[in-house]
Image (cartoon, rainbow, N blue to C red):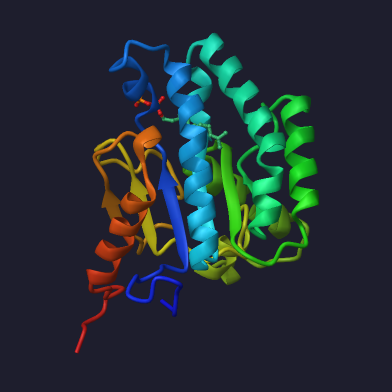
Amino acid sequence: MRETPNADLPVPRSVAVIMDGNGRWARSRGLERIRGHERGIDAVRRTVEECARLGVEALTLYAFSEENWSRPAREIKLLMRLLERFLVDERPTLMDNNVRLLHSGRRDRLSTRVLERLDESIAMTAANTGTRLALAISYGGRQELADAARRIAEAVLAGELAPEDIDVATVARHLYHPELPDPDLLIRTAGELRVSNFLLWQISYAEIHVCDVCWPDFQIEHLHEAFRTFGRRVRKFGTVVP
Ligand code: FPP
């Protein structure tokens, strides 16, 4: 935690968010589910801007899981279109807020169009020195660990690594973004008490904050409330606090 523009607000170094409830938000208003995703973009922008302003080092947003590929084709198509638009339209927001964009997840099922927009935005923001924003797209925690295991096995086969030398640090080094600090705080909106295959390795000691509002209704005050809750937690990391 550090000095912040809101002097009394504790600010975690690394924050991860499961942005849930877009569908429920839309349905409760008699709208199509995609309208909830569209409104979710505004909440993404608010959250990114506020995290950047407060000096959060890393923000990881769960935008599309590996399991989301089994949603109806129409919803996937619209979500991908939304994602493409987001990756272009939000470039000024990322640049104005000194935010560096990263991608967490597999690339193989993403379309060339999405990958091109993603790579352009990543390149455009590469020199930004503020908050690192990792968009988890086509991401699964188990898949990330399986990918890490495969790369470790390849290193063993290539003679670069001895099996007896594989430890926790080896696995951590083979994750998608080993340079990012593990989340101190995991926020989930829309009230569900699940981690849904998100950052399974990295959230080992994250504090979890579940907020009842659906993602499109997530406001800066909800983010601050999550930070305050985090500030009140006693973090023991498995040891004993004196
Ligand atoms: C969960 O809501 C949300 C998603 C699967 C997608 C998240 C996407 C956004 C917030 C908008 C796009 C974001 C970016 C970065 C472009 P749900 O559909 O599972 O909601 P439900 O549980 O109420 O059905």
